[in-house]
Image 1 (cartoon, rainbow, N blue to C red):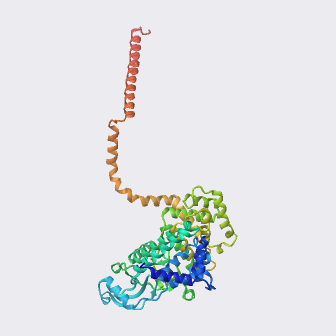
Image 2 (image 1 turned 90 degrees about the horizontal axis):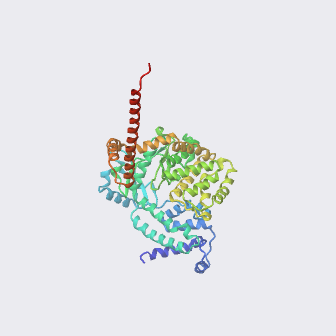
Length: 517
């Protein structure tokens, strides 16, 4: 009952924007549809359903906006027109007061603001649903950015998530596709991501890992964390100076090679995914800048590390084989990989799945390669899930979302960008490194630290093994074998003595005969 008021507000918003029409498309119960239509009699819904859903989520507040952003990546679950509209959700919300921000920073550090910073700008430079950012200068003169978690976020999030879990349970119970679409798992996934974002130390750790991974690449910069000033509610990092990547004309006028920038974005993505298995999963234009500093001119600047995707070696191998099979138009291999990975039931007929994949992919290859969207290929494959009960893995959904972001950004920078041609050599080189002699050497290097401590123990272990081999065994089979060996030895001794006797007898007889002349 403590959430009753919020629930009433949600229901009113749903009815006002006609969101029930979006939801009811998945329900087979006629009485549910009839009841809702009776309650909303006389309502006019002129705007498309995707637009109404976006507007309704914006009215419901930051948590629902964030949920809509996550839902926009699940194109295997929602209609395309709805997903496209949800991608327009902007995570811009009014900032909270400067006094509240100051108090939160002082409480986090246990000191007055002027004891930590030489200056602190009260007006935020960015404000989102989870946190806002202020520029400041440390006592030692370093320019920094201070990210502050919104006050009371945990209580608000927990309240709305409780309602979302309840709604998901209803949908799963009443919707025709409820069990297959797993709405409770989708909400649980969102719950996980959201609570991760509430811990700013986790975000700082993500940034530090990404900074180490990208150190030698030379095409991207990641801010350094000021660890002594990082807490769960406030983090301080190096201030980055760059131009938002959406300002293409400004970058072009400054002399940035826009086409190279587009190719570098593809390299950056595939390096994070296939080399490191650790990738920035929120690479929309608002989180990417470009450096104009002469020392780092033309490099990407990555920001906001709350959402990070990770891939296991199995995930990476599966994806690489899939991409290579796509490039070669080997649809049977793609179908086999889907079955081998456990995405579809083992009993699925390979020929039927191959035919479905060919239907999805073959029309794309009739167009110039530069016009083919790799992200859309993955998307179309996800849409075969209804027929073959494909279970889309969360980490691969994040990957698909990021690939769509990178591909869209790359094509915005360079409409002639051929993602396939750019990616194919990278993937083939990665495959060679995994399967060829270089891969063997790299795996040996990775495993060597595990076995190095055991090397000094090998002589002692070998000596012990030899001693145990010399000791009698109690097993019946071994005892029988030893008895047989003793019997054979005795038999050999008899034979040898007989041979020796025969030889000696022959010599004695020969000596008894007269010697010739």
